[in-house]
Image 1 (cartoon, rainbow, N blue to C red):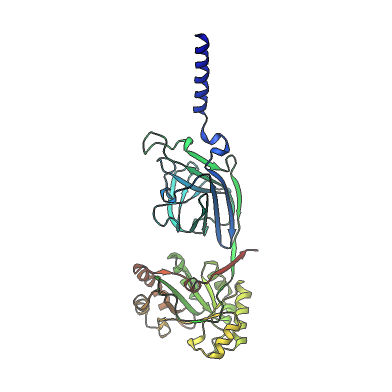
Image 2: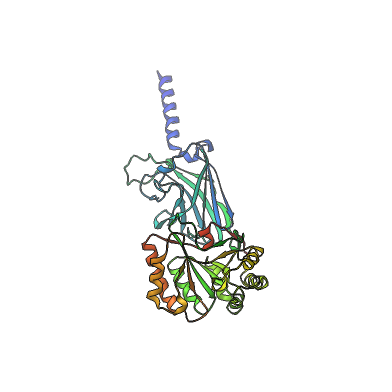
Length: 397
């Protein structure tokens, strides 16, 4: 009898110890996250995670409450060196599951200070590997050194209801002990694809996207246009004259630094410029900005077979427009804005000017034009993005 009681007490003690050991302190085989990796390709940050069992992405909450709640989530945590806030980038969501990520900026304890959804490309390489590609700038991640970790909360516990604090038994992480360190590098745009000599006046008509373009700059009006575009988070393409780039190098570099596109508009606005004129402009743009343009717009929109051959030889695409604001005639801000909003179609390329004359009307029209386009469901993109070309990035020196 005494032996039986002793054995019973021994087994009860072992069982109690097993309950006290949290799951994330047990063997690595019990951690659903088997591995994770960060890498950078051009402007994109690539987040890869390997798991031990198939994940239902649609059941993950991409904007969870990290302190209270009982959601399922898988998130990349990034903490910039010297900063207390943590950026949490989460997979999943019931809509746009493979085209978006949830981004929350939190305190170290997990209290959410801001939250949003950003565009991303998410793929399941197989049932056990997920790869997410996104622009770190969209997530509020500037270049620098970051401590990072992937966390997974499985849900289903504790039993204290939806407002109870998540149990450590449901939480697993990788690396399991110390956070890893990653250096996010600054990158610069150095060129673009698509310089095949093709002549275009618009992009594909299947999607509600539009490209705003500005000719004849950079000039004294360019900084005001850039401020409006930055405030409205809109992108544009600037067809620059080589001689204007030489006169306004700071504005030329600023256009590129803000994520807009730089393109060639000849050196000095000659009608039907020669191949050497085009090359001279490209050299000056590249000397000042470090970017080699792949788009060319002919002055006055005038083209010939000889010009097209020169553009092809210079590895560029000839780009005109299908919406002309006639802002060079100084019709006033209301007319310019109305022309843009009411004449665009999906895939339109809009002609405006930031140089070559007084452009205060163009500047004054821009904000209301952007508002009108977005009310109609349009997204503002660069010409290269509209045409499906790709910008080439390299690490900054």
